[in-house]
Length: 346
Ligand SMILES: Nc1ncnc2c1ncn2[C@@H]1O[C@H](COP(=O)(O)OP(=O)(O)O)[C@@H](O)[C@H]1O
Ligand SMILES: [Mg+2]
Image (cartoon, rainbow, N blue to C red; front, side, top):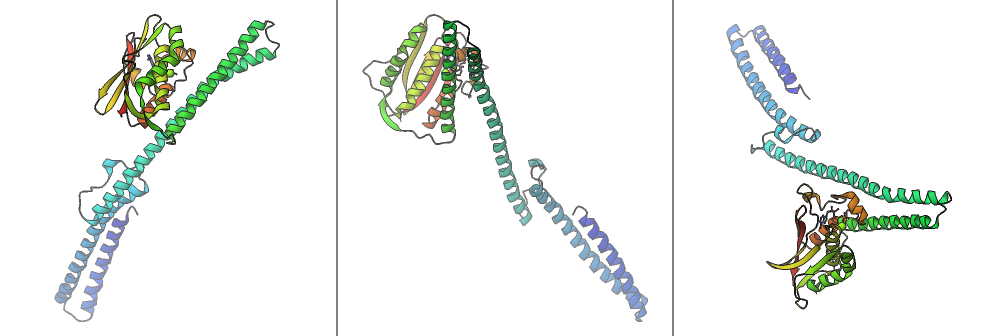
């Protein structure tokens, strides 16, 4: 296909020369005068040459542009946007080219998405196996020691069993969180939206986490009169999960003394803005944009020690976005962190 126009041109040139020679000799042979023979042969020559040049240039013009379209279809993954043919022409080739380019862009988009999905899956599987490996190897170590006859000390043996149970709990927490995330990501998570009092729900969450907060010398304050109702339209169970995650984090990442967690509410257009702020260790500017990523933790050992899976905030974000609302975070190291999210006012 590559040299087609040149071959056609050479064939045509050869053919014209042959026609000219045969005609000249043929006319002279049949008795026509030398001059007239040349006029007839010359006219025929001009006709054939014009035919040839029009044919040749059209062929070249169409061929070159079709070649680019052919390349775009056949080797579309090698062709970059800028290397493609001019799409401004309004003729049929320009239109065909435009359609091919649009098709090319769609294919490229699909490939990019698939590539991103493959990268994400690879990274996710790597993270999951890494997270599960630690408790599994811990349990294996405890069991092997006990199978070896234990440590002849019932107290230490009991401690090993307790540690094994803790590792099992950790594995269960990871698997449960993973199940949640996969439900959200596969779109099978249905919300059961009802009207409820968010102020009341915050009090329920405070009660639930009060003992843990006290053990960590942390106070949970709700900045709203007890009897004032703030009605929202949302999935109560899911929002309870959001609040528990945020307040639990605020307790886990508090400083040693005088921890204060404040929950406050603001009117925000048609929504209620809910803020959970603490005066804890804070999050550095570098880590802040990654805080909602699965398995991202600023301090892995502190998170593990507190029983964290690194999936809490990813689940929180999924829940809020499933409500078609948003969540943001602002923080200053050593000063504290504030998470703000909105819910539909009812
Ligand atoms: N209130 C907070 N103060 C300081 N750091 C926080 C706070 N909330 C979350 N983080 C950081 O964000 C990370 C991710 O949070 P999360 O997804 O809940 O996972 P984890 O299981 O580690 O708690 C935590 O490991 C911690 O580093
Ligand atoms: Mg957490």
